[in-house]
Length: 162
Figure 1: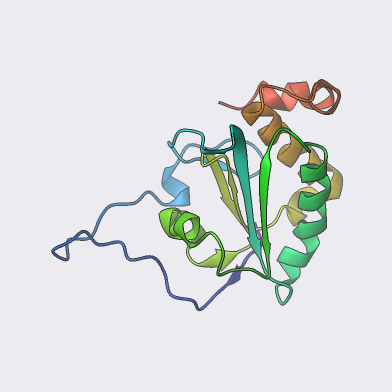
Figure 2: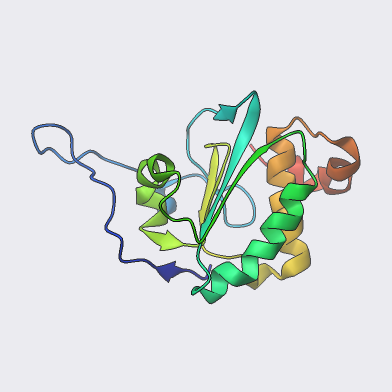
């Protein structure tokens, strides 16, 4: 995975009283597909739809590579997901950034799909076509394979996802 570090400071991983809280790192979590990991969290929703978060900024070449792919994939799910496109809006959805700081390590591009799957880094190593398939399959898993015309072509990948 290719990523770029941000110097924004990380989340405060301490409980009241100063005791550090244990948060799993990406390496310690179970893998899904396309470099994503299972967070162990329940699916988060907005208006009954799974929320898809993308974090990146224009000064990051890996973000600018992945962003148009993420946008194109999200457009395939116009009524099935709530897409939070945080390209150049790193002050948005701070709660999600902080919640998954142990995975993101304060770097971008960072993806959180339905609070169930997360990935730090771009999919450049997979290439555009494969990256689009991975992103599509993960979203299909969250939308119960809807819309069918979008999800049927990636059924084999969906079946590999827990």
